[in-house]
Amino acid sequence: MTQLKSSFKIETKLEAFYTEGKIEISRNGQFMFCGCGQKVQMLDIQTSNLAATFSKEEEVVTNFILSPDDQYLIIASQNLLLRQWNWKDKKLIRSWRAIHRTPVISMAFDTTSTLLATGSTDFTIKVWDIIQEHCTHDLIGHKGVICALAFNPSKSRLQLVSAADDNMIRIWDLVTSTCVNEIQAHYSTVTSLVFTPDGDTMYSTARDSVVVTWDMKEIKVLKTVPVFERIESLMILDDTIDYSQYNVDDTSPYYVIAGNKGTLSICFIFVGTLSIYVLYL
Image (cartoon, rainbow, N blue to C red):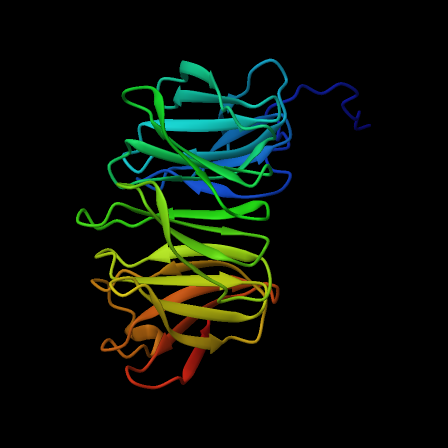
């Protein structure tokens, strides 16, 4: 007669690691950072195991970001604190008050990992020097919640681009701390602002189902391309990689979009036309 086992020991346990919002991937592609209520969870992508948890005093996390040099994880919480972690050593470096009146919901780093921009529901933007540990700019002008931020990667242009739910995109000159242009290129919430590596071109996406291409030398809209779905994110593809399996014309600019259809799509535009071709991954 076979006797069934009546007691068991837990061998592995999967915990909740993601609730909503953004994710960040480490530069080496090994770890994924996910917002999970009152903490940020770090997952080992290869093993799917929880590698670390970043939290402090049960604070509700409102946003977080990895620095481009892969050294720091900055977490913003509902109590208006910013915390800087050395995530590799799982060590809290410092905490400081965001000096916003309401929570930070958008953040961006410059390419040097020195300047951090924070956008709040109080309609303002702060720029921080995280090396010298002080606020360098207080940018006021939007009439809505700050929903997207991006630094121009060009070393010759010290620019910050911001978008708010007033549907306006503003370009700030950080040398003079002034807004040099304000354009309404979208008619819904802007979801991403993405620069080409040289900083000459920027793409903006929104939930109005279009991708807008910007000339950042003259600060003007070059073209508006319909993609027939509400876009949540855009990423420019590395032009040094072979994408021939997707029948991509390597003479064209191309990028991946993610939207409400639940698919990743490669989009590319033939130079001089407004035609768009979508290849579903």
